[in-house]
Image 1 (spheres, one colour):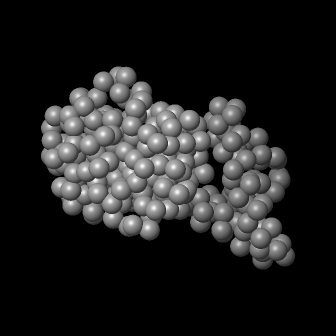
Image 2 (cartoon, helix red, strand yellow; image 1 turned 90 degrees about the vertical axis):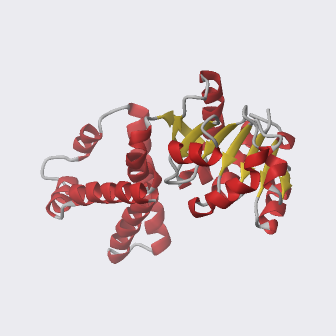
Length: 264
């Protein structure tokens, strides 16, 4: 099996790194192309994969083809290789906002397509990626596509109408979380903690809390209640967050991201 990448930026690099590390395919069975020649050389040296400046060289051999270009460059990229795309190749698109219908229109309605939405946690192997296949993709092909996506985290099949929600709740979410970490660290600095240490404590608190929820399977409300002792420090902080409309602001932010994705 050969896996090709059109676009060799950060997300593609994360996926390629995961594929090589996990041994799903050998480096020589991974092909990549990018208009940036420096990036082409970098990925070849970094992972030992075959890289090209010509997209067709990748597409001709790929059994699974990952489209990892910016959405605004998608039409030009597709035009550069469309004629070389084989009907049996499964196309995995990680381009934001490009629907299955859009991909079928530009690639062909008879093409095998899996539309995906990862997030930047892929860079550390901790992404959560949503995947929507079209009717041409078989169960076995979808299984392999999910294995490719899971090279840099977790992957889950969703109905396409949920993709806008996925963008809001996971695709854009790292930015909200980083803002939260930064704000908590700022408060700790105000209380006298050194900046570097404040970031370490705030980031580990977020990481540990997420891991606790995932590992225990408990409802977030239940876990929150476990921390809130009667007349304690945490419930005092929770009251301030509620008075400031914390939950409402988060809900509005997720919905704003989802709405913007519909416009892309």
